[in-house]
Structure formats: structure tokens, C-alpha cells
Length: 348
Image 1 (cartoon, helix red, strand yellow):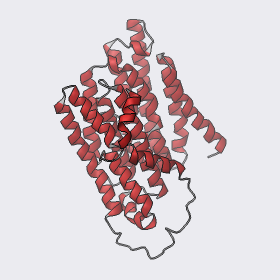
Image 2 (image 1 turned 60 degrees about the vertical axis):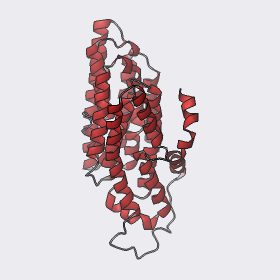
Image 3 (image 1 turned 30 degrees about the vertical axis):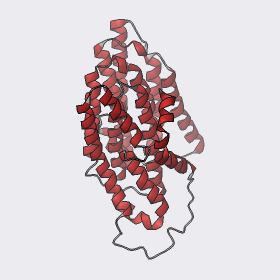
Image 4 (image 1 turned 180 degrees about the horizontal axis):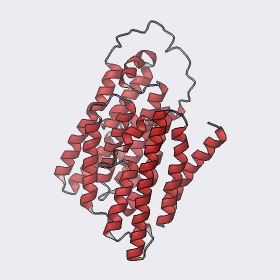
């Protein structure tokens, strides 16, 4: 892709998200979401591969549907209540429509069906943008409208997402689909605590972005898209595979890694709100996700490929990719748990 075109598209991505962040009017927020969608579509279709084009069309149709629902809900609210302000979403039909449209935008269950298929058709770099940056603008709107949403609806979306995110990833062999189901499960954790402690939702979103960035960049560095490829990667790049395995365990929420922090604080908050059953179900669903992360770690670190690598060249060849972002995100993914009190003091 032409570098000038790439700069324009990436700038538009930033502009769309910033516009949604800064808006208090529904039309402005909707425009930001549309700019975001239109900017990422050429990035998704740049490979000119039938699977990439199919993924792009699926993504466009789902995002257009969600945008139309948001516009319809905002118009309904303005018609019934005379308010275009995002924080004054007082009509129950409008608030329900908006949360379902935003759930479709970020891939919350039961509106998640497009996400694994779309992510599977993309390159790892575009998949990373879709899994991290594209979640920010809808989440800004979800946090703003959360006080007007029925708490039972939010809890149902959260529980169902953690269940489907854990269950759907169990039988997958494609890494991008596994990361898609991982995304669905993490979104469920963020939504479940949103009505009680929005700052914990932001914390979970921040840690999720760093952990997912590490996973995607590690797989890109080793050119891995399937579990079978990972079993060959240890002999080529042992250090990278060791940090990738730890990053995946962090995604699963194991102490003493960063990923344990949001899950621990969310379970603590649910217990404080006298919801022990919800907290127990969430913890059990986290075990499902942990299982498929452990499967990946097993394939990477504990299996020897049946075809031994005779050549010593692959692991000695020089790497041409930039590793700075991967190094920073890996450090954050593995080492933030000890400073949890400091982070809590900053966000509360």
C-alpha cells in the first residue's frame, strides 16, 4: 500500500476515535464511528485475497447495521424526549437499542458471530487494530450510557460473553480465532463490572489491549497462524516463545502476571456488591479460557515437532521487524501486578 494512503487511513482511524471520545451529541459520535469503520476497510481488504475480501464485507455489513441502530435509537430518543445529548438517554427503547448496537460493534455475545470469522480473514497486524483500537470508541459510548441501561441486561451480556468466549475457543486450531474468542471473553469481564465500578472496566480494557498487542505481535514475529506452526517455533526463537507463553498465561489471568490484576479486582468488586454467585460463575468461565491458553503453551514449549529441523540457519537469520513495541508491551503484560496498589490509587 502507498505510504501516503496508509498515513491518511491511520490518521482517519485516530480522528474517528477522537471524535467519538470528544462528542456529547449522538450525531457527532455516530460520525466518529462511521469514519473509524470506513478508514479500516481498505486496510482489511489490502491483501486482495478472497478470504480478506469476504471478511471485509462481513465487517462492513455488521458495522453498518450497528451504526444504523445507533442512529435510529438516537432519533427515537430525540423524538420522544427532545434530547440529543449522549448522557440524557432516558427512553428505555432507545437505551436498549443503543447497548445492543454497541455490543454488536465490539462483538459481545450473543452478537459475536461475525468476530471470529472476520478476524480469521485478516493479517495479524490488521487483526491487532481490529481487536484493540476499534474497541475504544464504542467502549467510550458504552461507559457514558451505562447508568441508563437495565443492570440485568448488562449482567446477561457479560455472563454470556465470558461463557461463549471460553467455550468457543476450546476446539480451535487457528490462532486468530482463539484470540477472537479471547476478546469476547475479556469484553464480558469488562461489561459485568461496568455498572458497579467503571474505573475497573477501563483498567481491564487497558490491560487487555497491552496483552493482546503482545500476543498478536509475538505471533507476527514468528509468522504463526496455527497451533501446528507454534510447535516448530521453539527451535527457531526460544526466547520469544518463552515470553509469548507467559503473555498467553497473563491473558488467561494467572498470577503473578498482569492479567490477574483486573480479574482479581473485578471478582472482589462483585463480592462487595453481594453477588457471590455471579463472581463464582465468572471465575469458572475464566478456567475455560485458561484451558485453551494452556493448550497453546503446551504446543509451544512442551512438544517436539515430529520433523526435526536439520538446518541451524532459521534461528540465526537476522530479524528485520521492529521489536520495540513488542518489548514494551511484553514488559507491561508480564510485570504490572506488583504495582496494583499504585494503579488503584491513580484510577479511584
